[in-house]
Length: 190
Image (cartoon, rainbow, N blue to C red):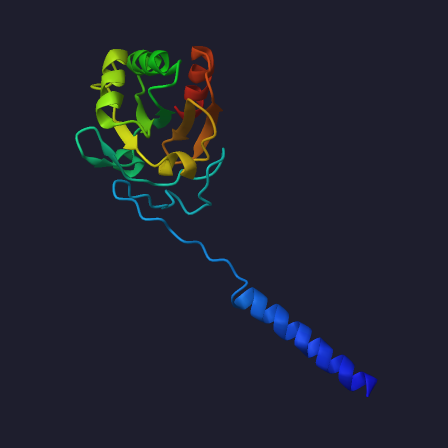
């Protein structure tokens, strides 16, 4: 009789565990639709996609100031890409945008900065980047819900992601950095 009770208890426990892991106890992710940002993760190579150094940069699509949908896949073949996340409240961002303009002009190999504004209205962001002299020099994209910023693991302001021509993240900088650090990171992608 003790063996029979033991088997029944064991079966009940196993059934409960199975139900928990394969039924209502299981949490499934729910995507929140966004009216203005379409974020999709597509590997640029066959290795893992992620938001850390050594992983493939996730693909995304964002709108520019003029409404053009743009992503890093549009610039395959460019020697290197620098994603630069910023907003108008960032005290160092005007200088950083100007520095990226200067370094892009000095660099013979041609890296592409992509300035991604975090959650500011388009008019405010454009006015800010116009003052920095960067609006006409490289793509400026709007990330109104921080979807791409989160996709890339952003945790500070400004936030740089340096991507080589193979789509591999080679360096990440979080917060204000010197021009020397930016130049060192550029060498990793050129």
